[in-house]
Image 1: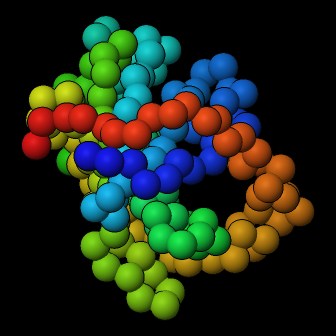
Image 2: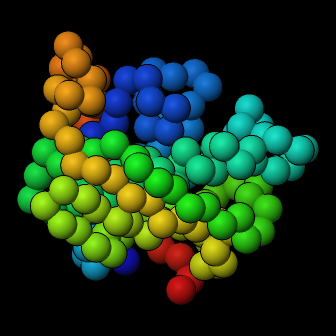
Length: 167
């Protein structure tokens, strides 16, 4: 599937922070179908049982992905706070393996957004998915005194034009 744009990365977020040594360091891309996707890998540091990623890290990726899906429009000015997340763990999620995260807005009102998110293997098997609901909120109410532009400071150009996986 073709990429239509790349989103910024933060400094310290556990999912997208490029300066976080324990983080996933995932990059997120706006796709031609209106979804957002991230080709990524969890690492051994993210494990619960040997060979498996901790459920909290899986939920964190699904949550991050949902908010990223809100940014697939014309601007990344839609910020929100998670109100609910319903995660379904369908199969063990391995670390040190190529994975794809995908999210797409399902419903939106003037105050709320609901997003369907999923983590897939490269064969298109759903390993975990979630419905995440956000209340829209001004970034200055979410992170008082913090400049979003200082935190979301990285735009790492990588020339990626497509994300391929079996559907």
